[in-house]
Length: 213
Image 1: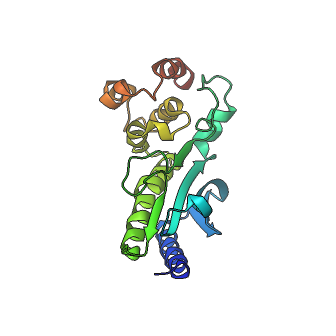
Image 2: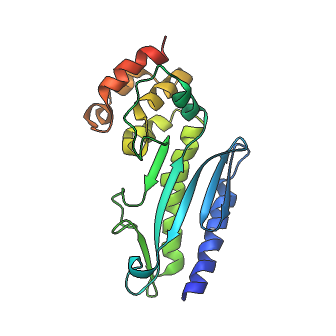
């Protein structure tokens, strides 16, 4: 498979993914290697597929792709930004967003050296299917859960707190909005919460009194 055929196959698979994922609340609009994410008709984030060129393209590869995903909107993020009472983590590239993913972060066989390489000897359609399966299950499901303020977003945050700009406040707001399904004590007793170096326990404690007045 050549580069032209690869691009056609890539476009076909991402269009299929978008069609399956889109709903009344969350809509993805894909154009020019960027998937813009809309929530309730408002642009709240994007997933960018960067096709590497030159020295960044792995030797012999048809394509090398680097992924970034950022969510900068939604009800939880608006409340975090607008509240003057929250104690927030210091500003950096990760805390500037509700949710951030970079393909340099995960320990996943698809991403070697922060990118996914496709070679002519690969089963391209099968590898692309695995690639977009990861996008669907690892990225879009987490994005959907946090935007919709689902209780299951707590598990997402506890499993990968480094993906979230303000994990402590986000979890507290999720608990407040899902009182029948979530409790602060259950989270505090969870090993993932206790052992995580990405969750600041002091920020958690200080924000509890702000969220639960």
